[in-house]
Amino acid sequence: MPFMPDSAGSLPEDGFAGTLVGRIWRPDQDGPSVVVARDGTLFDISQAAATVSALCEAEAPAALARSASGDPIGSVAEVLANTPRASRDAARPWLLAPVDLQVIKASGVTFAVSMLERVVEEQALGAPEKAADLRDAIRTTVGEDLAQLKPGSEQAMALKQVLIEKGVWSQYFEVGIGPDAEIFTKAPVLSAVGTGFEIGIHPGSSWNNPEPEIAVVVSSKGRIVGATLGNDVNLRDFEGRSALLLGKAKDNNASGALGPFVRLFDDTFTLDDVRSAEVKLTVTGEDGFVMDGTSSMARISRDPADLAAQTIGPNHQYPDGFVLYLGTMFAPTQDRRAPGEGFTHEVGDIVTVASARLGALTNRVVRCPDAEPWTFGIGELMRNLAQRKLI
Image 1: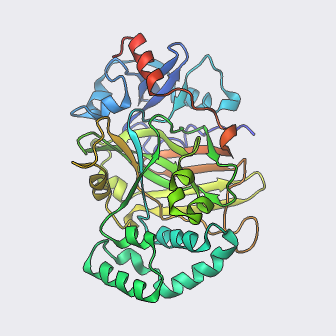
Image 2: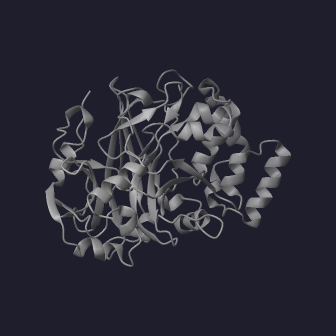
Image 3: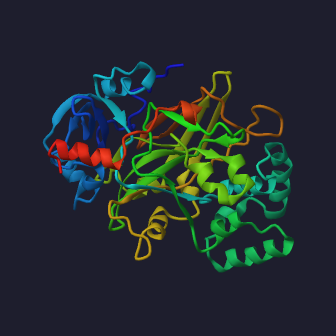
């Protein structure tokens, strides 16, 4: 079933007041270009910054994006409308994920509610029918007021000892309330899909969910320069069977969505706006199923700056920068297929992740083999940019 991202709804509530940068595919160049949105029009600024990564390495990325001269490509509405594969005119530009050479990283178990759900997954060993009883038992033992705990604090370590004595300690509690955050590589460079694209669910999974998040964009020096919306698509049954299956639970074709644009930090948008953001999720199924949820960034257990600092440093270096999913407090438990089994995706679901200052990211669920193939990698990008004399 074709779907069309709403151009007005895809934009932040203040429209084009901020510095919105992204990437488009230019059929006339057989490759991608960096664009900035100005008063409803997308301008190709690749002559000033051949990649979004290079733009984010600038001393003042927002100022460069705003001042760079560029060719008008078309309106945001036109390019968005041409993005879904089912209705795309291959001779006209379409929107891509708004990052390129940055490593795609993710942090997990950063909210108390989602931490409890990870423990449920672990204890259920990937069987959704066991989830309801386990959820009640774990909450009875642990409670739900874990959001008040500072990870790594004396109080958190005291609770750890209590949970060990009760026999309910979990590796997810370790990264949820311990000193070290869970940071992992979500997906390969250039593999993210943007708004309007299909997102993929592994055909072997029967228990999975969206993870609506904000993702921060970080330079090679560890400086957070902007943010975008993300959907860290997750296979709960795979991860629940074994944490060693995290890669298979997370890294599948079209399983990481980002967009629609990166909003660079400037005088209209700062890290404090990320810290106070509300992230909304809507899932609408072809079967008439509707699910809504909200994540409040104010309830995150670890500050975004701390998560970024734990990702990069002397022991972990990213010369082209990275984008970091910050985690979600939304762990869907609303029953869909059967009582007690909670939520899982069905093919055809339309998933929208939205936040007032970042707009909306909209995708349609398919099985991974049915998603748009990923064929344009780092080698192709370098050859294309060299051919266009951009590097």
